Amino acid sequence: MKWKKCSELNRITTQIQDYLISLNHLNQGLVDEFGQVYKAFEYLDKDYISGIVASIKAAEKVSMEEQKDRKDIKELIEQHKQAIAVLKKFKADIEKLKHLTDIDKAWELIEKQTKLSKELSDYIAGLSKLKHLKDIDEHWDNTESIVRSMECIKESIETQSKTISIFDETVRSLQTEQRNFIEEINKVLYEFRENFDNQVKMLVNSQTEKLSDIEKSHAQAVEQLVGEQREKLSAIEKDQNEKYDSVIKEQTLTLSRIEKTQKETFEQLSEEQSAMLEQIFNEQSANWGKTIKLFEEEKTALNEQVANITQKVKFSYLVAGGAVTLTIIQLFLNILGVL
Figure 1 (cartoon, rainbow, N blue to C red):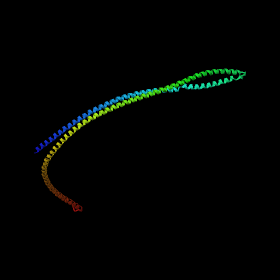
Figure 2: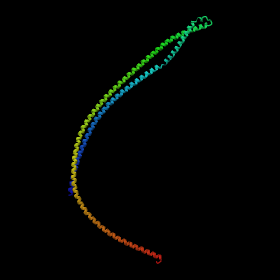
Figure 3: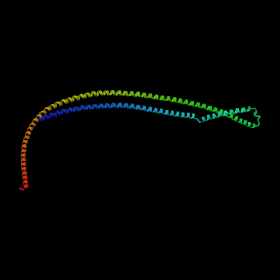
Figure 4: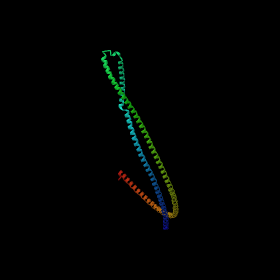
């Protein structure tokens, strides 16, 4: 009977093991499917990353070209700034020429000398008109000397006047040339600045157009790549969902069969176990009755032993009490002097 039960239990265990093995195979297939999905995602990631890397490299190339153009613009601006600084310094030096201030001072001095010469000439003319001047003997020598001096002064004044006229013409010519030069410098600076502004605007517009075209093409490429990746991912996701649903259904059916088999096995085992437990309970009940009977017998024997010991103790107490009483009486008699 026991051998039959063991063989039945082994058979059920073998069936459960077979179900578990088939379930393991299903799980292994599911793992393989997920591995293929992972490889597909990895392949898509590589394509997507390659596209992004190519776009980044193109953007870096454009950025390097833009930085080079910006560097050229900065160098051109620095050259223009240096040229403007040199022209401004040259203009400031021209406006601050020291000899022009000296010319103005000389001009004022010449005007004063011209005025003084004119006054002296008028004075000489007035003296020449005096009729009684030559008739005065005591003033003749002085007058003649003065006249000679006046003639010398007059000649000197005339010479100075000529020199002043020439100098005045030279100064006026220099002033005219200075004004013309300053006007020419201002004109050159204006044309230079206008030309420079136009060149900068053209460069900025060109760079802006290039960047706009590059950004537009990059955005289109990225958008196209994203669309393709989405379509691929959608197809893969649909395929994997179908495979996953199929695997789930197979596993669900397998688990249902295993659960049914286990339930039947457990019910069969429960019936057999109930019979065995009932038999064991009856045997244990009989053994328990025997044990209780033995305990009762031992209890009776122990009670008898306790009663005997109690009697012995009482007798011992009586003997001890008698001995103590005799000792007290002997002590009392010794005190009285009888013994």
